[in-house]
Image: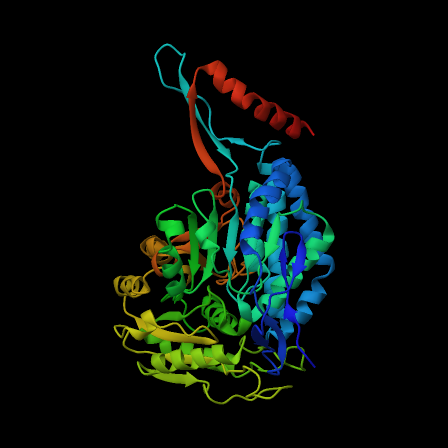
Length: 529
């Protein structure tokens, strides 16, 4: 039976690429799911369609109207999310994993719909501030306005979150009135494509607001410049390569990168066995190792523990990992699914071997795992691997990332030593401190903040409502310095503003009033409604 090529959604229609394409395998069975090819597709036409039809359609909508369209998109996905769950299982995702991606993406879209409705004016521009006097006589002043650029948002996504990764970029771009072209990662492109199909079939968006390319995007960067926004999620190496493209370096397209990082979680010295924080730390570490089979850019890669507690922590985590059941999503008892593919498994094995060379493997076997409901070799299954490196000066834990169910225990001796170890990661998306000692928490957070985009403090008081170490929230910034890409996504309305052009306007008070009066009147009317 021939395998169909996954189509792309361009210029308002689904179009298939030519050639044999790249096969995508089922992560559980190894069978071919589909093929991906963009050969022969008119990508330049898609960019032109976005700049013409897409911008025009979104430009006719005020911010609240765009928010309403975004809410309708989220509702359409909510009604058909089981279809996305089913496809996610073929990528190795358990129901819990799929919920993180699918429900997380839908929830993010709904948050942005609410932010747009409540926090943006009933207009198509934003006036940022009050008039600033620029002369003594009161006849000359200035203000800042935010308007929609005449470009597109190109998003290039990672394989691990085909739905959430797309929606968390798409939502603020839509609110800003900027049309989006989605380039999903090949291994899970069929999930992203189905989400776009649901969106397109909902009729919630004006034509050209969203398009999708299944496959590579040759020549597209050559068409981008200062009016465009590029959002990338993936490896630091790929981010560095894209950042050097003339579209960014010469033509000043806005470029935002969110790259994988060696995130850490820190156990405070007060959190000894028997204390709630000790148990919370062990639970969180296992959760981050096993959700999405550890394929999360925010997962805990370095677990930092005081030297006198590392044995106890190791034993507690090993006991929890022994209860993890690896296998086919939906099979009885399975709590961790497969990696996205066999190539990914080999990459993780190689990285884990480099880490193990600096210390020891205290739990798991990279080459053997008991699997429920599937063949361990045909599917991309891997045991959770807990490593231990007793010499934190070794470079491997701070340079090598095994993007799978792998974490490394490292000891520290005092806060100064701890902060030095944290900094060796050279920039992280997320960190966490698990402690009930307020003085310790404050010293560590303030000392580590420069190296992180987000830091979670977890203790007995917040645990009941805490969203966890690895979960970005749309209201807060997601990104990080250095190795983590140096960018910011989400962060509430900050992400919308990042897609807009800030312009200072200067003139007499009457001129400034004439430019902004319609905006302010619409805003008042919106508040009254």
